[in-house]
Image (cartoon, rainbow, N blue to C red; front, side, top):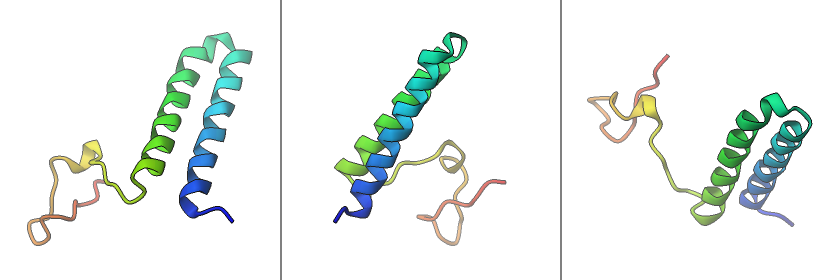
Length: 76
């Protein structure tokens, strides 16, 4: 039985393959699809290497709740 981590990494890698296939069949999209695929591959690696790891999102780097300094506020 696969763990949630393994399932997530596998889905991300399958999505990366999908993006590469789209880029192969659509030369005008190839650069963007490769960038997407590389991102999905990188996230799959992060999920496997550190399943409960955290990474700051650009919108979370500057806005932090004063009452809960470790919990970023959601930016809408």
